[in-house]
Length: 294
Length: 230
Image (cartoon, rainbow over all chains, first blue to last red; front, side, top):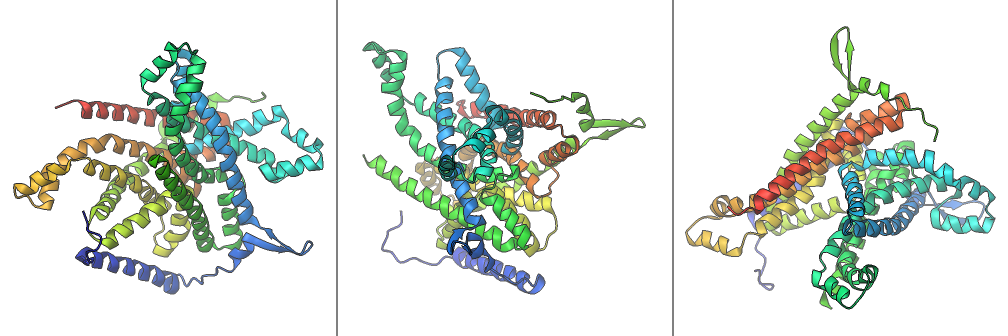
């Protein structure tokens, strides 16, 4: 173990890595400056975060922030939807009866073994062309009162894009729920069997054993990986850009093409995701450590 | 539900006979590209994972910082954004013009982070006493690795490493975003050419399923072998 107060000795490897990093940065700088003759121009980025609205004389969010809000909305609703479905599937997978177990097994196996991208394409097409017309969201929206629309816009984003948003959200949640189902299953199976037997011995029903004994204990084991799943959901929400849901990555794609500023836009977008995911990871890490103390 | 199924057009996507000559269709070509990407990425992933683990376990401060920065950046940004940065930013800057290699390198850096975690866990799971035993009979650090630590650690790493190969196959679908002609790209092109969305995606899904499930079976077999006391 390292003694904290001892002075740090510089190793040969330190010097080597330092030289390597400096060389890499110098080479990239040289390529950008002298070979590509690229002029960095970050000035367009702030305009895409917020723009000045002439009519209302206010700063209003522009494409990047709007896309970012959509990403957060997807993450928020997605983790709720996926958790509900995932808990149901996880319970089904630990069921005593064969049928629910088989359904859960098939669902999880199917989704975890198909790449997210083809899955999203299939489900997006299926949901947007077959399911959403059946529940006729569009008609509901066109007949809704302005105040309802306003509330819906805060919750789900711009009214004209709600169908689009919903199909992306549902596809993504169906995908994430399979991973959450595995977390829930592991949490439930980690409960010692004596606990369940104890429940039965004092005359609780199967449902009551689940409700009062298994789930409260499993919950503690489920929460930390579920928090990690939220970060994964934020990252995976970038995939719905491929099916034209207007979240952060989609907006970045649009801006990069229209402004012809690929370097700045992509680096900045990566930075935005990094800040959100990294700070969430640190917060969750700290919370988990605090929980472990009790 | 109004949808006109045209399954009879699907075999043509795999192969055709023109003048008695067999011509492979886009789906077969795409599948081969996907496998090629997975194979090269697996190799690079192992190298990156090994180097990162070496840096993380080294005494050098710069090495540990570099490894930490790499891991945090890779873990906390979406793969799609990483692919974009490799394709739109690093590819022109470093001056190589090959989308497929930009994709392979990007995937390798992404999975390399997970591989390094697996390798590290494997090495750390070997007891401290084994190290001490190694040095007590006069082995150098490298010799201890070679004769004592790795023979015990590698069997533990194999099953999760096969999991990485499965992930590589799954994630290679993301490269369809940047003009790499792998299976998903070919499928998207077929969908836009023929408008047979359901048929094409219903064929693509099982193709990936066959690949990944057979690999999963290999993982299960390896895990059983590791657990068996020798």
